[in-house]
Image (cartoon, rainbow, N blue to C red; front, top):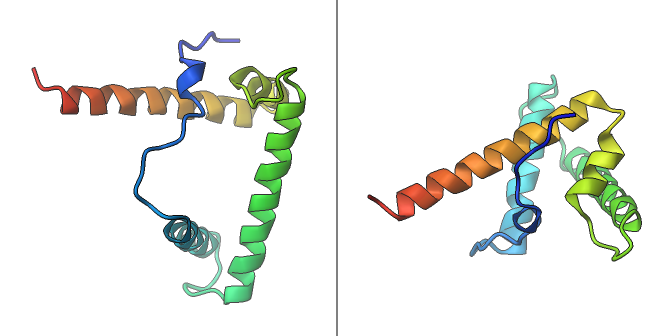
Length: 117
C-alpha cells in the first residue's frame, strides 16, 4: 500500500465559498442529469427521477460518513477510516488516492497563482 503525503487536517476542511445551499443543490442536480444522460437516459430526465437519484446518493454518502465516523474513537471522519472502509475495494481505494493527489496539486497551483514570484 502506497503511503500518501497528504495533510489530513486539510482533507475535510470546509470550502470557503459564497455558494448557497440552494445553489449547491441545483448544481448537484445538474450534474446528476448529465450523469444520467451519459449513462444512456434522455437529455432532460423527469424531475422525479433526478429527485430519487439525489436522495439515494445523499443517503449513501451519509451512511458511509456515519460508518467512517464510528470507526474513530473521537467520532470524526478521518482519512484512515476512509482508507480502511475501501481497502478491499481496489477501484474505490485507488480513486480516493487519485482525488487526494489532485486536491493537493490544485492547492499548490492555487497557492502559486495567488503568490506570483
